[in-house]
Each structure stands twice: as structure tokens, then as C-alpha cells.
Image (cartoon, rainbow, N blue to C red):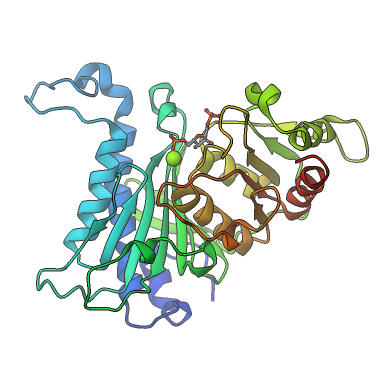
Length: 335
Ligand code: AHM
Ligand code: MG
């Protein structure tokens, strides 16, 4: 049962039965993520002080090297998950190879892998605009007791057991799903607790926002150009509103609350699109579907794509179901 103003800790305990496996491992995993998120949040909030404390790559007054925030976030999430020995492996958008976690007893006994984009949209940091963390959790397919394998990470998104994001915005929120709907928790920075502020999040019945980098317009496939024109036409309930932050988590979060579609199609310069299937698109697609929305690569369900590479890219159309279907309609005619 969903109770507003519950803390995330209370929520996890109360909804334990809904977690796919009852060993408590997944709950501990989400707990670790919320802890790392608080640490990263603290650092992100200090980003504006960079002129005082020294920019990335410089040495600060304490004689410590300043790190880039995305590197810092990557390290914090990896450290937190590794120290707690909850997962058997981590793959990150920031790291070329996946990381094997054998555990102190070297017994490789943990059953989950985490894939993450530790700080998405990091080009927004310098201008004080929201950024996010995205995570995706799978049950390993290789035998427990052996080192984690590439195949444990290369699972289709439909196999995710949980996924979520943290948006470091005007408030910091953690939004996640374990396949039983989507719930959003807001951080009270004074207390360091996350409160259930957005229970059972759903896309509104109809969407009216489209979010795309229109600077790439001339490079888009014809179907995408036509879809954009459709959004702009003065007909029925249109024209739609254009909103683009350039930070996937923030654009998605706004669209889920207000109703809309985010898309990053292929371009003539990036024939596979820009976004990463495993770290960005699959987790957002899982959340979108759980919130009554849809995610497509323009032709097929994102969650059905069989990944072949860790850092694989895909075009991405995600948001209100009817808007994604309309985009697919244009793409089918003019790919
Ligand atoms: P990143 O992982 O390097 O931050 O890139 C992903 C980001 C998304 O958050 C955002 O939607 C998109 O790239 C913006 O790209 P562009 O500046 O090309 O519009
Ligand atoms: Mg990213």
C-alpha cells in the first residue's frame, strides 16, 4: 500500500513482498544507491563554488586534486556498491570495461549486476541546470559462484528487475520501479531522508510537450522531420509545446509529470543515435512502461532489443504512448 510522506526506508520494508526476490538483496541494493545519491547530491550542489574551490583538474586549497563531477559520481556509486558486497558486477557509461566484484571471500556469491550512467547531462553542470543519475539492475544469468560475465550485462531491457534515476534539480528526487509501478521520493536535505512525494507516477492521459534537439533538424530522417511538423501544426489540440533541457533525466521527468515525448533520433552524423541502450534507454524505457508510457527506437520496443555491446547506442523515442505511436507511424512511412 502506498502511503504519502513515508520515508524510502519505510517504503522498502513495507513493500518487501513486491520485490522480485525476497532475500533482501535487492532492498539493500536500492538502499546503497540512495546513500550514494545523497553523497553525489551534496557534491553537485557545491558545483557553483568551483571558482572558489578550484576547477576540475586543478588543486584546491587543501592540496587535494579536484575531480570532474562525473568522475566523482562514478567513483562514489562504484565504491558504495562494492563496499557493501551486494552486486557481482558493475558496468558504467564512464568505464570502458565492466567491473567484477568477487566479494571478500572471493566466492562471487551475489546475484545482481548494476549498469549506470553516474552523471548524465554533465555538460549542464557549469550552467546550474539539472543533471541526473540513471541505474538499471538485472539478475545475473551466469552461475552464482563464478565471476560475472559479459552476458550478465548484455540482457534485453525486458529482463530488468529494477531501474531508476535521481534528478538533481530544484529538489533532488529518486524515482524507481521494481516492476510494480513507479514511485518518486524527494530528498529533505536538512534531514537526509527521502520522502514518498510522488506515489504511483503515471504519464497523464494526453501529452503536449515534445523534447528534441531541433538544432539537428536538417540531419534527421524524413519521418522525424514530419513528426516535428505534426507537433507544430495548428490542428485539433496542437501545436504542442517544445521543451528541451538537454539532460535526459530532467526532460523525461518533466514529460512524465506533464505529458510529452522525448526523442533522440539517428542523425546523418550519428547513424546509431547518441544515447546508450544499456545505461540510458533501457532503464528509462522500463520506467516509462511502468508509468503507462512507451519507448521505441522508432520501429520496435526498446526493451526487446538484444544488446551486443556494452556501450551500444540506439535512437530513442520515449514518453506518452499515443505520441510515441504517432512518431512510429511517421517513421514507418519515411524511415
Ligand atoms: P551524456 O551521457 O554525455 O551526458 O549525453 C547524454 C545527454 C542526455 O542527457 C541529453 O538528452 C543529450 O545527451 C543531449 O544531447 P545534445 O546536446 O546532443 O542535444
Ligand atoms: Mg549519459
